[in-house]
Length: 298
Image 1 (tube, rainbow, N blue to C red):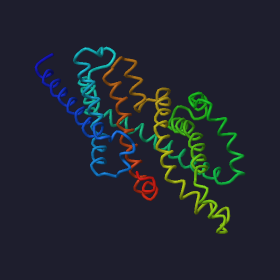
Image 2 (image 1 turned 60 degrees about the horizontal axis):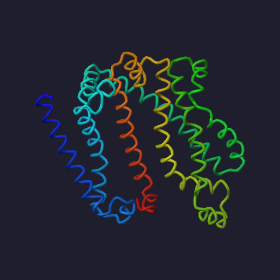
Image 3 (image 1 turned 90 degrees about the vertical axis):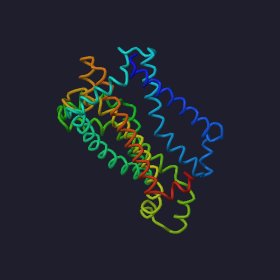
């Protein structure tokens, strides 16, 4: 290794050691490793947990760099972080990375938004009304076990290889899972709320609007947050077949020409987008439904 590389390795080794010492001191030694620690609602526990959330990815990258530098990871299989960083910089400077990322993000936004609206609406209706459930459940149970990628060829026939095809793949990939998970959310509503609504003389429609929907929405947000990651998975399948832009297309081209740096850049972009959007949706859910998370002491 060159002198700069040795210095970088030494600094990252120090960071990793300090990270592990801090992890031990703040969580393991004081018994904060348990989920029960958060029930104490101590401010220092929340602050340490927030730092841990953002420091851990840096620790993983540092370990990746050290393992590559010491030869534990073959460079022809997993490129060093420096090579990935150079490839990412080239894509950023050329504008390709932003263009590909924005193309994929727009497709997920459209396809997932449609599936979220339809899936949540159908799931709430099926959970709240027996007639709707008996009509929807057989279809959902049947469709959930068919791999959505099996519909790719059919969707190409129906929609061509343009943008509607990609929206359709994302939509078909998550819609049935959203419906079933929302039905399960409605089923888990505390029966005491429903019994109080019935004894209060509320009609079926009033129970649906005043009890079922308000008590379901906090967990519906969690359902959508989980299925958003699946939407990105199906988007990659759509972009690999019949696409000339997007992160999936970038990964496919990089694999074809063995550009491992660009390939890993595309993969890491998915991870960064997922980390940011997942954290943003979770934070928004806690702000919108603060009463729900206070009842859970989260």
